[in-house]
Length: 162
Image (cartoon, rainbow, N blue to C red; front, side):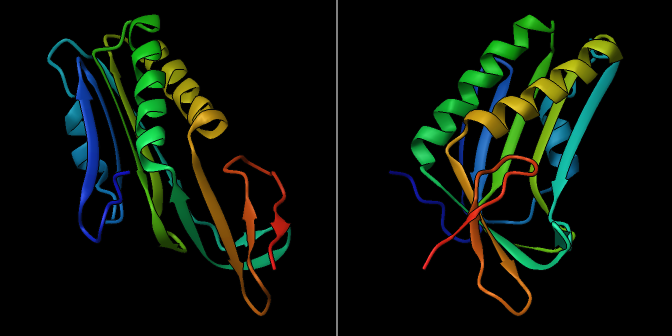
């Protein structure tokens, strides 16, 4: 199993699809440059950030873990399915592992397309597919209490792990 160390990146690049896992800070410009094309009139970037609260509780930080090899393959399969479906020129997804403090990005998804409508749809579909299928889990650490593991889905409550 590939385990990214500090500042190391695990990545797959195949025919306009780039996917990666890293423990380093995410760079929005670098991921947009991965999908840039003279044939694209639109680039859509989604940046998922750690917010300071969940369900009224103050969040201290998030920690992400993954089954790296499988997560990369799943991300690649999602990218390869979305690319032709929306006529994209490129798609790139990178997920950060380890601790992600408040206000920092945990995931970046960029897509490029000749037209904006396809780019908007493809970007949202890529995010929803990642949240539903990619083998990444997060632990929310709350101020003043134990953290909880949660599914990597919006609004899904986690279970307290002893």
